Image 1 (spheres, helix red, strand yellow):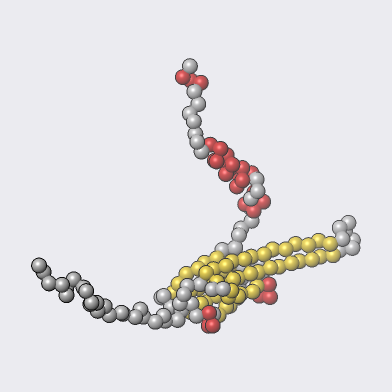
Image 2 (cartoon, one colour; image 1 turned 60 degrees about the vertical axis):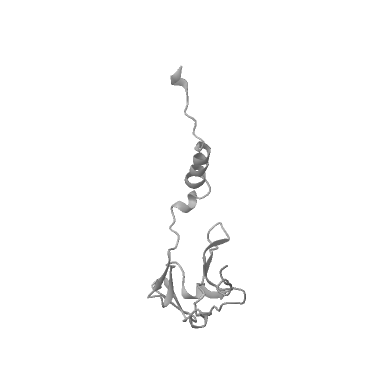
Length: 151
């Protein structure tokens, strides 16, 4: 009788849904294609560098903006082909890329530079020096414990 017992796994349903979603379902067409890589790093605490690998885009397809304290990188490419000899009228394809990266407080957004070469967009965000914290002197107030005499 003990052979017919099945061990209860509270996560079996979740695992099955995860497998269906990522392997067999929604994202399966994406599995074969490689998503663009984005590297975000600091150099000597003097600047933030963002490198977006966009091999299928041209310089005219890419825009870099600063919006409400965030660096926004967008790329969009549309291709349209018409061939009267084939049965279809229009053949279209498009691809896009979007990244929004929050900038740190010390980012100097007025001196951001961007370069695009060999399919890699490199955006450099220099840091400005923040003012040092101001030291506030603490004085003893009236009625402090040092003013009271011991009984």
